[in-house]
Image 1 (cartoon, rainbow, N blue to C red):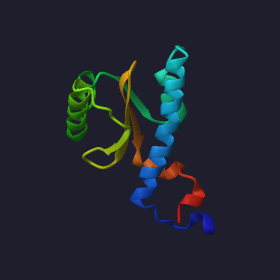
Image 2: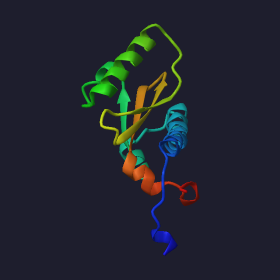
Image 3: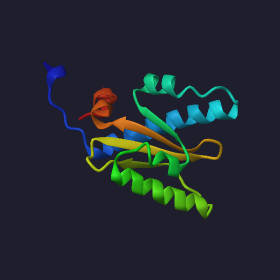
Length: 130
């Protein structure tokens, strides 16, 4: 009976979970790039159940349909052009159904990890949900 209880998940918990998972995937990608081993995005995407886009911010704009993410990519492109340090960030798309962990890597340029909000909630650590 307890397993079927409705539980409340706060937006901060979802963002914190995406931040934790995004950082883990970022470290794995950076390790593979540092070791100069093949970066198999398809297997990483399947392993974590996320979408992964890699490239220059201007090129990624053509691959992304969401207007809000396109604006963020414009801002990233500008920040990179003035050589500003850009920390990893979590962005929500316009409809709010996905979260994107975005970070910059000197070799791979801009890397976007896309997390479905529904999947994050389903996969969250059960004790976290209250």
